[in-house]
Length: 430
Image (cartoon, rainbow, N blue to C red; front, top):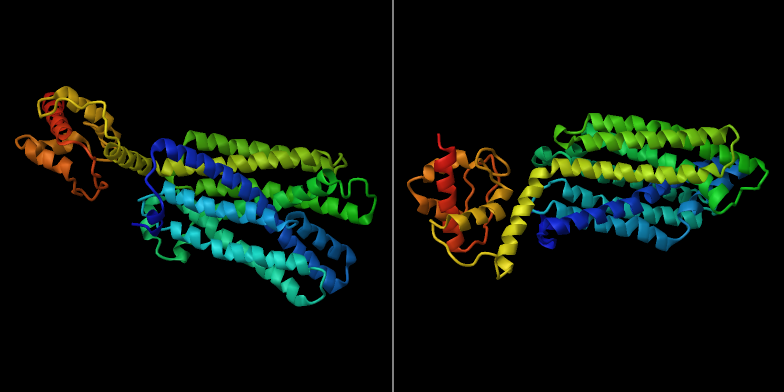
């Protein structure tokens, strides 16, 4: 059992669907903000260093304005930077309940450098006007912690797309060396820096209109910086998205994933066009459209990750559905079928099969469990053994997960055992 399983309850498929929708909301609140936070902090530290080293007042001013753009309020930092992380961890613990995902602890452990990095950057923000180099170093160290923490965070999430390798990840090095994990992280970084450049145009020239009407060297410098950084990293982002897709495990692919990836490329192409137009002299109010479209692109990238995860965890989701069904049969006292029972009550047996067993079994093909046609032969002359196995299931074949306790009444077990053997002998026995 995973440590996180102690803090989560088995959920029904309907509840899991709601939880997964909440996960999308948390990512949409967190990733665009934290991406812009990392990019703005990185460039602020750089311009602060350059301003002090070269006595460049323009760089020093821009360093302060950049950090003020994202770290303007500590409460916002907690609401958008910290709380979503905790909710994301709880949701993944729920989604991966009883899944033995060895990467989940690394996701949780990434929160420490992230939170400490956020604290260091806020210390840097409130000490940026001080002359001592120690405060510049505090900001630089905070940015490095954020970069390292999100490397582990993104790598852990990308590893959820490859459940076949979960058991082989024994240390952080094995977690981080995957090409898909690296592609996902680089796509996150480039989109973060692109978001920073576009955010500079939006927040400096549109939202707050701080520099909209300013005719100064500073305004021209800020505008050029935002547009060039936004354009360069918007162009780079699709390259790493494609790199991540190429290295995605086969189990995670689907047509919907390819279609949504193409949509991301189209959105980024439109953003690139808007940035290029502003570089050529178009009004900065186009920054509103670029900013909004990039947020939409972020949303589609988040949906992409969710699609890949659901494709990869298809068998695990079936297992959870079966487990939840077994749980419900224990806690719901009234059932649709109460009367009857016994090995000759085939109607009741068929009903139990369709309601419970069919989630994981078919007669002629394997699903979560083996095909009935391959295992029922050994019970043909001993139905009591089949009844005993369904009553107290044990792991038999290492190629399949152990069948959980179904919580059925003895009359239902007898009925479904009779129905299974009768159907097998009449329709599937060779």
